[in-house]
Image: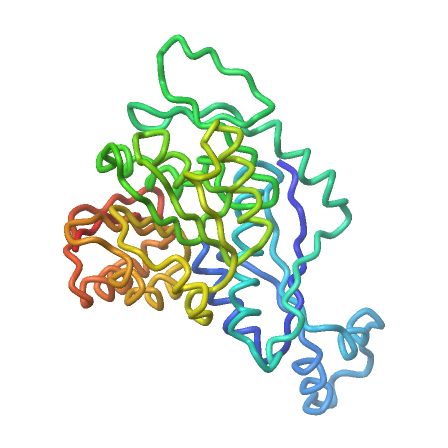
Length: 321
């Protein structure tokens, strides 16, 4: 399998937080280059170092960078979009710029080539008993009468291939009713809210911190023949933007949030704000090691845990209020 190097530029102060967030989306290994660390080494090195390679000396002036390696397939594409989403979140929270520029750059490959290379792995995928998720460039023989959910993720997270998304769709299948209103927080490609409408929901509001994700979700809704008046998209951070939080203020039958552990915990009061009595909350994007921490935080706000599904280290949970 081919691997792609992704360099994420930050600051010395941002390394610890960035690495923690990368671990929360399932990235366990990374390489850190930090000029401050190397400067400290030069100051404190003992007399046994007579010569230091020029490449190492270059670290003294490098921009602080955390490097990860992603497989060149649909899983890697999902992980890259998750990285970009968490960087957007960090930028929104870093009002003083302490964490550097927080940008991800691919090494030795054009972004256009990356975007096309992984498409060969994205094939129609049956999920649950009802849905099949397919990319816009693939054909699907619908003789089994499954509902076709057509997705072109562009640079946004959500192809259905990642366990977090599949677990959410499987839970949705069991709780969506005709006429439901759905709020999709951290919508990415829009796959969850679009899936909810195809399963019977009446309308959806989709929100993402990334403007491109919100635009992609709207385009995917059109691909699935959902009227514009039934699918509303917004971009921004409801945790810091009360104007946006008020703009979507309503009581929803279902809330989906496939994000990361820290953001889910931070959003717990917003879940209370937006959920109808007796409504359902579906959360995902949680690594198994942090599952109890996240679910307990949500329960502390008055939610009742109904079900938890775990697949290869990822957890999704269903709550009611």
